[in-house]
Every structure is written in structure tokens, then in C-alpha cells.
Image (tube, rainbow, N blue to C red; front, side, top):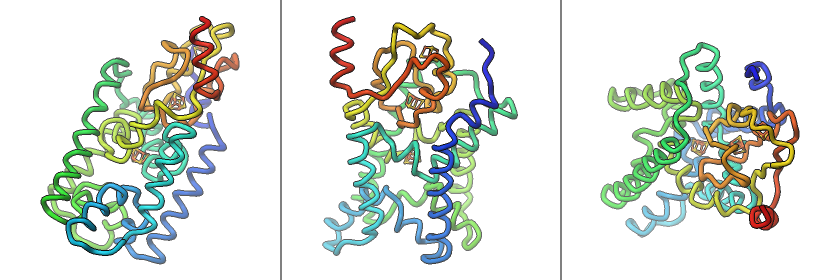
Amino acid sequence: MKFNYKRLFFNNPVRSIVQVFFAVSFIVLVLSIWGFAGTHNLCPWAVIEVPILMLRHGSGLFFVWGILIGLLGIISTFIYPRIFCGWICPLGTLFDFLGNIGQKLHISSKRIPHWLNEKMRIFSYGVLLLIVLATIVKGSLVCQIACPAFWICAVWKIYIPIATAIILLLWLALSLRVKRGFCRYICPYGALLGTFAPISHYAVVRNLEVCNNCNLCNLSCPMGIDITQELVVKSAHCIGCGDCIKSCQRNGLEWASRKSAKNLELSN
Ligand code: SF4
Ligand code: SF4
Ligand code: SF4
């Protein structure tokens, strides 16, 4: 069956509207209220770094909104896998957009083998570990050195060091070439959420009775998950976007509780 790119672009209009709403709110809050450094106020990475800095310096709580958003992202993952990444994070929205452009310009890579796609997630855990260690050693917000959100907001105001500019271009190029490449293999907060995603209450479940293995769901998945190999999507990459469900023309996919899906798995 021929893949319909137009359908993919407008595949999930509700998600697009929600994403644009949060992206615009983020830009307005950061640029009009806090200034470029305000990205820290809304960044969920705070949940990784701030507690370390508080312990190290004995200082009080700061970047409270960032910590709250970080915690909410974790809590929501216990209900739907990484729903923060799929619906709210403005960077995720930017990377969805870049991924679509890459596809339109025919510069996106051929699909990465699923086993490799899953294995390469280990890089994001490496970044997470590196950030934790560097924060302990340096005692400052080290993640800002290579944080796309911070520098995209700051680029109009301050000089970007060459090394940082190169890293940022690398992140953007990666996301043009591989849909959500940054989210899949680099983002430390995505790595943290991915730890809980496989145990979220709801998961995408495939109905084997109607599925004809047409592969449309796999082609629509921004995280490159092999949905057709499973009855229940267990991948830590799943960002709860629901694009696969929308793309299936046979209503072969739905959100269901993992518990009921497990019973289904056992009975198959
Ligand atoms: S993986 Fe990171 S950058 Fe991507 S959507 Fe999630 S929090 Fe945002
Ligand atoms: S779940 Fe739907 S989209 Fe996916 S392979 Fe089966 S029929 Fe095709
Ligand atoms: S499996 Fe479905 S819900 Fe999960 S990331 Fe892929 S398209 Fe989105």
C-alpha cells in the first residue's frame, strides 16, 4: 500500500493543535515574562539537576516550575507512556516539524533497523549519566551547554560559543535526518521518562483479528517503533502520540490497559 505523506502530516490534528498551543505558550512566557534565561524556569530537566545543586550548595529550592513540570511529566508517564514528549514539549514539536520537513525534502534517512533503533537509546542514558556526574562535579547547570531550548531562545541575545553552535546544528541536523532523532537518542529527560514508559497503565494494543500487517502504523510512528511485531507496544521510545492509531485504516490499534492486554497476550 502506498504511503500517504499528506495523511501523515495531518494525521493527528488534535495533537498538532495541543502541541502548537504549548509551544506558543512557552515562547510567550519565556520571551515576554522571563527573558531568554527563563527557559530554565520551564525546563523539566530541572528535575534532574536542581536537587543535585541544592544538595551540593545547601541552597533553597529554585526553578520550581521546571521541577513541577518535570515531576508532572514523570507522573503522566505512569498513565500514558511519555505523553509529555508526544503532546507538550515544545522541543518535541520542533523536532516533529523538522522531521516532516526532512521527509518532504527526501533527506530523511531510510528506516533505521528496529533493533538498532531500540539499542541506540543507550546514548540518552549516557547523556543522563554524564549530566548527573558533571552537575555534581561542576556544581552548575551544565546541561545548558548543549540544551537546544535554551540556545534557541538565547540566540537573539547572547553570543553562542562555536562548540555549542556546532552541537546545536548537530541536534537539528539529526532531527531532520531521523524523525525525533534527538528525542530517541540524546535527550536525558526523555531517557528518564523512557524508564517508566514500559510500565505505564495504558499502552497501544494491536487487534490481531483485523490487522493485515500493512505497515502503515510503523511508517507513521515518529519514534520508529516496530508496532507490527507486538501485540502490546512495550518500547521505552513510545511517546504516547497516538499517530499509529490514527494511521491504521482498519481500526486495528487502540489504547488499552496493560493489564487487560496482558490477559489477551496470554490467551493468544
Ligand atoms: S525526549 Fe526530550 S526533547 Fe524530546 S519531547 Fe521528550 S523531553 Fe522534549
Ligand atoms: S495495526 Fe493497522 S496499520 Fe498497523 S499493520 Fe495492522 S492494519 Fe496496518
Ligand atoms: S507506538 Fe504509536 S503512540 Fe507510541 S510513539 Fe509510535 S506512533 Fe506514537
